Image 1 (cartoon, rainbow, N blue to C red):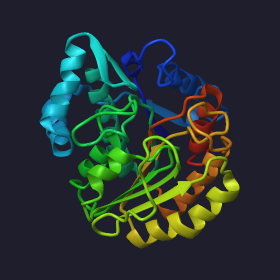
Image 2 (image 1 turned 45 degrees about the vertical axis):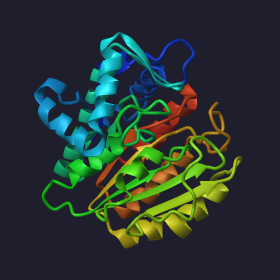
Image 3 (image 1 turned 180 degrees about the vertical axis):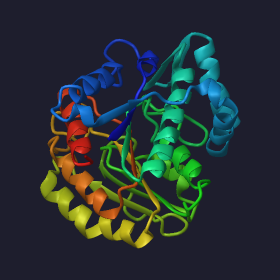
Length: 306
């Protein structure tokens, strides 16, 4: 069985009419996964309720984010909603939903370490743009970075790698892990593109960062040599005990927010590369805004993990 961590509560982070990061993203993925021939091989699990681990969640958040940022997110929700920045709207329930998303990513770590098999965290809001002292780019808290620090507290976990295949550079994740020798961060992303970070000459404090900027219009013909020539050697040399994938699907040709030309089945190939490295993989949803290609890309990812 392959674990998918999901809750309808993730739909309660309301971003307003016409915003690309909308609840329908999750609905489309859930519907797609429930219609595949192998749907009975999926084990759907609810994330641990925030109330059951609130103190530990806050401690983890405070390890990664400033208290001022956490309080700002809570304050905006408490007054009924508003904006963290021009791209990042919040509703009254967004703070609670963002905490539940973090909880779901932590559950993903636990499930993978318990089973030795991949798990997919189907949560929102996404997280890889959230920096230490601010949220941005649709992101409130840095789910992947928090999950990595959480994993390092587990027995036998000395090193964690984060692979970010979202079309946008995970500036927040890199900001939060690049000074930690126990965490490696690797990103393929369109350049130039939002947020304008992720240059190829950034290596982190411990040679633990690899950025691979991809030109607009890039197809699998360019991604495959990037994986084989750079990403796989980098990750194999690092030898992580756990791999966290910031699984954004906005590099699809049909996605409205970028200009990379991948197809949904290409994410199955990415997943095969990851499985060559380890079966201990936490996939967590980041971007992806064309609903058909988003949902089919998640299907392609999970199908390779069966």
